[in-house]
Amino acid sequence: MDIGSALSSINAGIGLARTALDARDDRKAKEAVSEIAHQMADVNLWALGMSEHLRKLEAELRDTAAKLAAAEERERQRGKYVLRPLVPGKFVLAFEPVDGDQAPAHYLCQVCFDAGHTSVLQRSNDGVTFNCLRDRGHRLIVPKALHGLLGEAADASAEERR
Image (tube, rainbow, N blue to C red; front, side):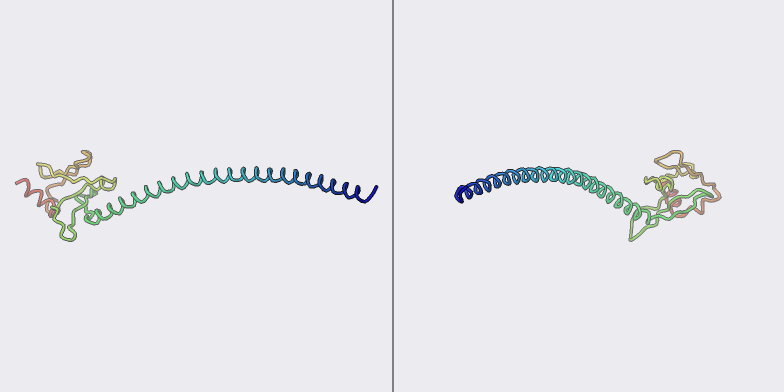
């Protein structure tokens, strides 16, 4: 074998080796691209899940903020009333004007207020019974001996009946 043919053979071998390497590198590149595509699909699914979770958290935040605002308003309203016994063992929320509040003296049903409802107790025509406007079962009968203890709300109610 002469040097020229040996060099030609070596060049041909190098060419075949390059072709083999290129084919191998192309296969590796395709495998790498496929792996990256799978990973991106996994990341997209994870991001979609996180997006859904974020949407739920935002909804919970809005709901909690609304509940907090309602509770703060309820507490502000509660600050206008003082818990008083109307008869032994029965309590009402008596109105206490705040900052020049012009509302007339009145009582709220304590049971209804604690349940989240504002219900004014109306004094009946007999002058001894206070009836809850929301729940007829919430009724207070005040013995005549205790009428003097009713305060301004009872006096205002008596004035209205005259």
